[in-house]
Length: 322
Ligand SMILES: [Fe+2]
Image (cartoon, rainbow, N blue to C red):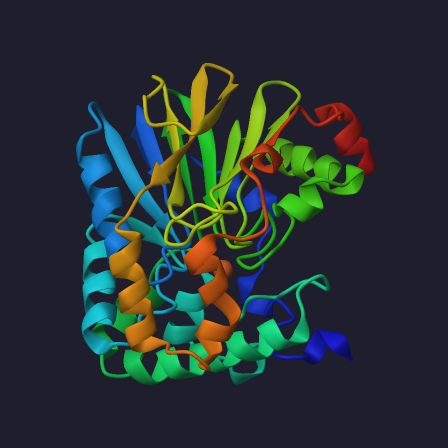
């Protein structure tokens, strides 16, 4: 059965429901930064911290999972872990499979059918190698295991649900650009926003960014990757910034009610990152085969594809569809 292939399915422990996000907010700020998919890039971490430090007012930065991935070097692993955990963080599938390994889950990515089998095999071997690094840091692994799978933040009095995957699972692909481009996917997104009583979902996991607006001034903001390029011919990562005030950093942005939802470029030192990546994952290695082309020149995805017009589904019709 295809579902039993490691890396292709969501373990039961990853699952929750959008209703689990209806509870009270755990933090209240004027500006929230959400950075998923750092993927072990210390240069992106450094640049992100610099940009965030300049942010005025009441603020928070949440690393919403997969901050580890390429950092198989022990020093890099320790640096990424200790630095990220100075901020708020939630678990991604990578941290979960490091802290609570489930051999049957592989990388825990729950890759959908449009991702090729070779990529899945590479990812399952990458997590194995990363696990062997992580075993040297039992205390850090305890901290990763204790991280939540999701958070709710209040930004300017509006509820923002922060997840790694989607409204139902840590590794769900419901908020991928591919799924949100379909009528069913957009309807499910609108239903999830209603079920979580959220103005915005901030997510990551699916590797490509999308900023999808919904009726009623709601939005799903998927930052793609903070630590890898997200668009063809570029060399910067992205974070999501949600605030009562606009910034000058936004690559593209939408309004959601009174909030500004922005995609902020994390313009890290790309040459230094390429060297650091190659030192850990030389040509022929699993990560090199799956990711180096993207790290060096970006994915085949354009910025114009990420910013979406309002989905043609009202919350009411989405509720009927759900
Ligand atoms: Fe992920």
